[in-house]
Length: 149
Image 1 (cartoon, one colour):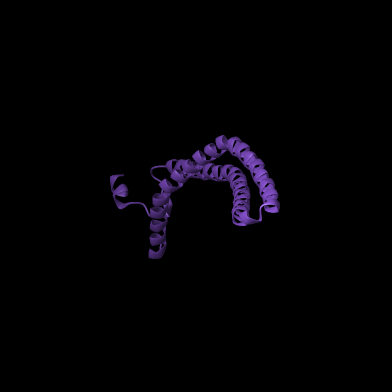
Image 2 (cartoon, rainbow, N blue to C red; image 1 turned 90 degrees about the vertical axis):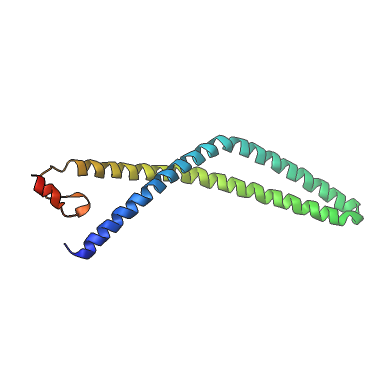
């Protein structure tokens, strides 16, 4: 076995050991985000619908004021800008909710598959007989294990 392959195997093992806690924490975070989105989604939808009604009402008032009060044009422009901002916020929140709801289960499934693969690999490593020449991660057997036999 060449030196570079041993170095690569050691680097892969170190990186896997360092990234595994990060992956599990990310999985837990995504699961809690999914639960939060699922519980908040009906409330957000109801609030956004009410915000749409308010926006429509403000636009109606602004249109009526712009026809009758030419002096209040600055106020009317500010109110119109506010309604546009509220409409954009409504669209952005709905899009973010839809994306979070669609992506959350896919990421959870990917992490479950990753965990199943890691469990299977661990089971395979434990099933290697004591006297076998094969060692974990393709490394050569330790010298002290041959002396004890």
